[in-house]
Length: 156
Image 1: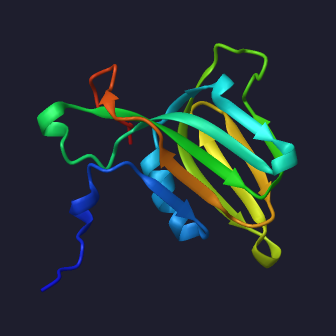
Image 2 (image 1 turned 90 degrees about the horizontal axis):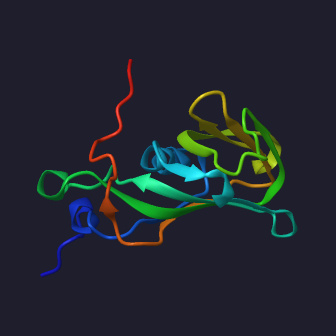
Image 3 (image 1 turned 90 degrees about the vertical axis):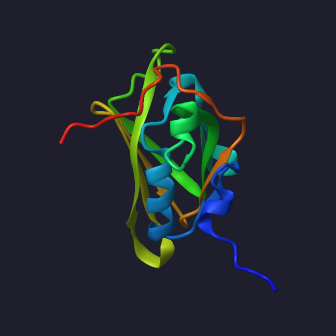
């Protein structure tokens, strides 16, 4: 007799998720919330129409926190089909700047096109004009204890 897999079965496995619609993107956004990354880990490849961010992602999905404490993992967030990138509140000349991701949303346009909005802490934001929504989030290292030893917290 076979049994269907349960969500809990994969909780300790690395994430490898894709989003092709706004509902999928909400899942990726919730898992990437509170990720931090140096501005130097943001790469725009215009010729390949791709924006990549190498994140230090908090493992919101981790059910083992009571056992080992809060963890982070290095993850690659990639947005494909990007036609243009605009930013606000980000000084790209400041190579020591650390950014904190709050949310990723999609504003649909005509025929599958639209804008991916990456909202950052403070007044920072990225606005990516995309031909079609295609976003991936993939863990690329083993989890490690969060340096702060704490779970991110938001007021309100």
